[in-house]
Length: 237
Image (cartoon, rainbow, N blue to C red):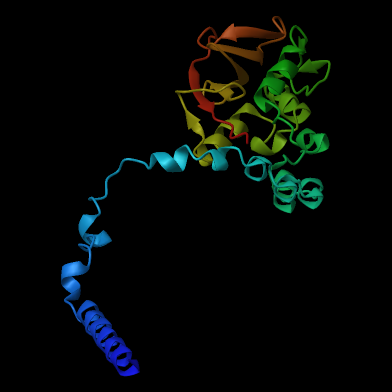
């Protein structure tokens, strides 16, 4: 009886063992599910369309930490706002105009018109008496009037020769200062090859001491009985 039960037990164990071997040793490929494609093969081609999930993420838009600015990042550095820029200060000093002293401009004075001064002095002697050999200031002869005007104007060094009209004429010729053209105010006028002299005052007119009857007058260049000879061009600087 026990033997029979033992055989049945052995037979049952053998059957179970064979069934397990058959279940374990079968082909795996027949029972595994089909593998899913790899991400590289199934991923679509990248495009320029933005990802909707990135812009509509509620967590990203409602995060209070992201919306609140960082106090450390927005706080203004007091040193940066209160410290002056050394470069801008130097530029302001460099480009600022340098004031010119007013006294410096007053040093430069216009050069006086010496020829105009001569004419003023000569006109002041009009209608005074003619006296032979007189040199002023109450009476003059022709050469005496010319010498007086040059002396009062401070220009005696510009007219050489002696006291006589003939000596002035010779001096002018010796220094190549004589011509009959292009006179200037203040030039000496010679008539009769040195018989009479006067001063040219412009516009074809001359002032001279004529004679005892007429005294000192203004005449035209060619109004005298003596013939016009030349101008002595005075080189007043």
